Length: 83
Image (tube, rainbow, N blue to C red; front, side, top):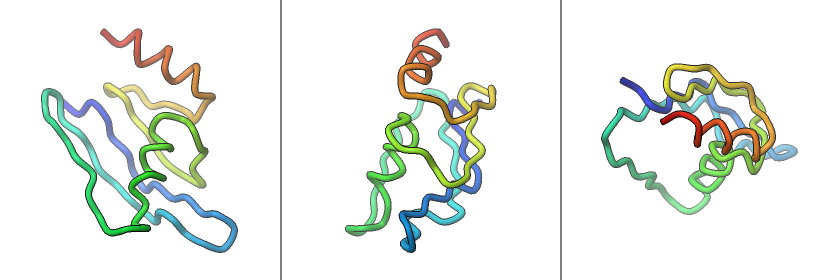
């Protein structure tokens, strides 16, 4: 089962496109790392997942429940209620 699933993640800062069409999923009971060159968008991706910044576009699913991008405290509250 996918715990986290993201489809077509895009983030644009003015004229700079930090993430473009990124899709991935993380399976239950796995350890996942994010690696890449400087400026590849690793930190931007993590900030999007925890709600510190808003994506330009994304379809985000946590434990098979689709989420709308909301404020950080709502996202954390939802994650704490999963188990």
